[in-house]
Image 1 (tube, helix red, strand yellow):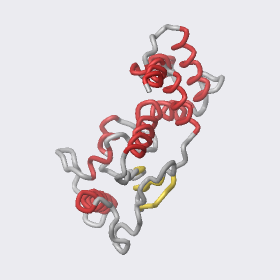
Image 2 (cartoon, helix red, strand yellow):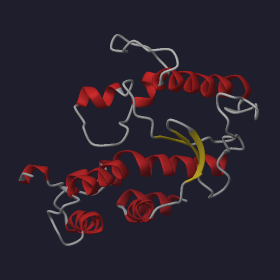
Image 3 (cartoon, one colour):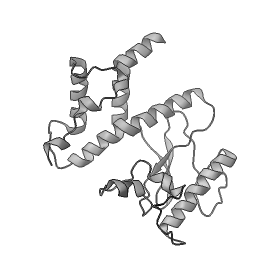
Length: 209
């Protein structure tokens, strides 16, 4: 590992929070985040996992969580959350980026719904074929019925995808099989909730309420 691989947490703090880079407040938040993800060690055996955990939380997971909580508070419509773990030859974005560690990349799900110039030949009955068929079935069911799994006896899906209820983060894991899961609100999400609430933008928003 080289020095350039070490995360600069101050530069990773979302600009929308209103922190000025280099300010004592910004540096304090960066130190807090670094301590949470890496502890007291700048380099560790689990560096890559810790790095990708941090980046996932910053760029994706907290935003998803916050959107879910906001939407569920103001809407009566069901909200369906999914967690994709399926890795096949159709995970093209991951391949294009040259990522070789386990896990699914952002946008990889799109290639199971839409064919493009890079889509490989899909063999009938293959894991790719089954994955595409399931994705299309779930999404078209939702478009037609407002429910991705309206038929409990569907032999292809064999699962009931429950919507989120209150603080219960029910979701569907889309892997080689479909499994109903309940994702806990992690310590890292609660940390980011605190960071957002205590930020200049968060304080300004609270003052306006």
